[in-house]
Length: 140
Image (tube, rainbow, N blue to C red):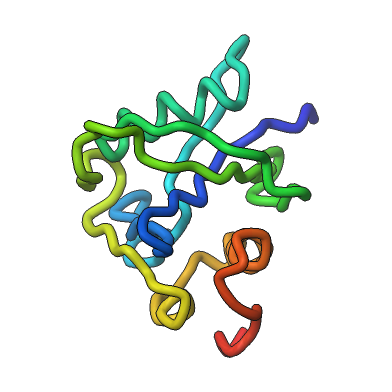
């Protein structure tokens, strides 16, 4: 089975990380994730992430570096994460698609939300990469 890439954004603004609460599918509803989505056939991962942020959150974002590593999701999908910032003049993020809430998390609040289990290692790596605090303390 060919590996399929899901892209996620460690979207940062003012030292805070954006988390999105899933509204669908039902088995993921109520849990939090880094915003993003599936890469379509023939699409570069970076282009997919910019598109997904526009579709899901209504924002214009500039991607930074890819955070080293990738994390397994439901086969055949793997998660890759990039740092991202809102472009000047971008709309404020809104939960437009597949999410019912967004939350900007300060470093001390990163583990205050119930992240999707498969996103926890990616969030830990993103937080460390961004220098937002030590991993751990989230009871996993």
